[in-house]
Length: 437
Image 1 (cartoon, rainbow, N blue to C red):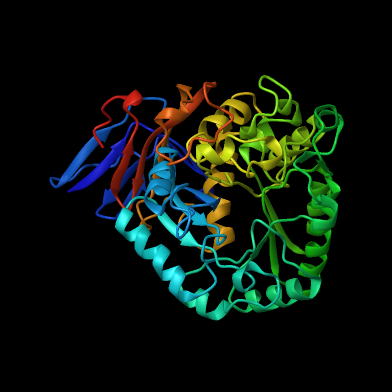
Image 2 (cartoon, rainbow, N blue to C red):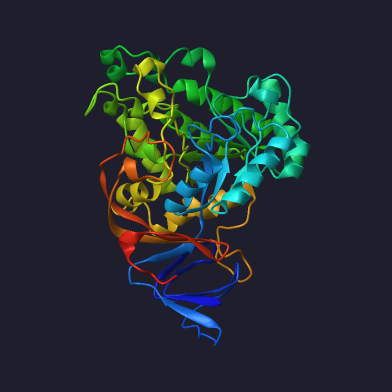
């Protein structure tokens, strides 16, 4: 049965369309997009409530699914369940699993798990170096053929300038970007929070913003040297944004992403409302107001290319320890859309069209995967968003296997109404009523 979606507002910046367009879903593909489309005898008409936004499927290009090896934190099945509940039709998963995703066999394992879950699409990202040890390049050609879309040693930077140069050269041969966790290990040391007055007052070892920006400058310079593409992951420091702008102005193939927690929170959360709350411990750390405001500026002026969650689940027992001993990271798939509407769209920082660029159009382009536009013949991956929906974040009700979020109990404006992957409705928000999809 074909389905004709009517009544929503289409937001499709890749095609320059925003307004009352209808979408015909024909099997797993988009049949037509147009105004006032007529329904055939074999077509079910779905009248969406007014106020809903119909967008190309959202893509999170930085997610930790933890499988294989850390299934007590997350699995491909639970992670993709969280993804579709968060409005994401596809996710790209990081390779710092156990064993590391550094060969075709493990890439295939992840893809089989994703097929079994049959929820969001999963695009594996392979390790730059074997075992992420920073010594030898992993088999890039093998992983690309198996289905990897990018390379990274996420969780740590590519160890040396020469290894990064070679990685950029080889990845460039296969059209893949290097996604870099920018961090100078010698400057980070044993740091656990942003280096500043708040960390000092709490007796926490600090990580300066320069630990991030210095490594970013190295990698941007190497991208210019090699012609390869480097993508700066989870950018947090204003100095790093300056480095990205510097690289772009000089023609380097550099792009970057920012997480919702880095454009919403600051290091003040280390001290209040709950001092030493390990749910605000992440790497890179929450930084000062000036850094947070710089991220908002980069989102507004186009310097930042994508929003990604860096969804990093951890078991409750791992987080319920002293701040210094707790692992870095928070979950983010199920809160991202609400935070984006509440802190970016409704205050007027960015438009709805720009939000779709950051969450769909640009991630698809950067990873070279299908999506980012609603056109005839494209996969019917569609996110239906409710910009005015009242949302109260509840960690206990999340679909992720882990609960490590600093946003538990927050009340936000905006959320997800439904998620459609390959023409199948894989998530319906009960708060939006029966949409008939």
